[in-house]
Image (cartoon, rainbow, N blue to C red; front, side, top):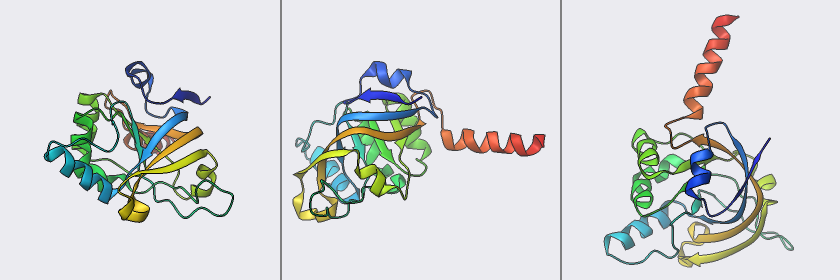
Amino acid sequence: MDRVIRLPLTSKTIEELRTGDDALLNGVLYVARDAAHKRMIEALDKGENLPFDVRGQVIYYMGPSPARPGTVIGAAGPTTSGRMDCYTIRLLEVGLKGMIGKGNRSMEVRQAMIKYRAVYFGAIGGAGALISKSIKKSEIVAYADLGAEAILKLEVENFPVTVINDVYGGDLYVEGKARYARRLNSD
């Protein structure tokens, strides 16, 4: 059964999540990719405020496509998370609590998620059209000059994700491979 989670994330919710948990996110999350992450880190390095308060928030690594008439957003599938790893720890230090994307995270990022009490959710690659149905509102909040890489604020309803990395060091990719190997060896 899917857990229904109200955003922003709370410490209590984060501590209850375990790798493999399926969840439906409701509320506000933000979209940022490589170029936006680079600018956010540059702002932090200069002592400037970020374009939104990241404390307790979730950032979705998404490559949006243009909205067709009558729709909020086009396909909204996840992009590869590892490209953001060089920026992630700094954002975790200032309060980011969740990320959504696809693919593995580096060991350093996984350790920082434990230290700063954050989680990494996976979204299904190739399901961008289906995921977009969970997005009820989309607006640019910063870096409009970046086009598709601008920071977006999304209002989501029952946005489907799976916990990949939890605050206890769990990693669904590692655990899944181990379970598969055990099953193969038992046959």
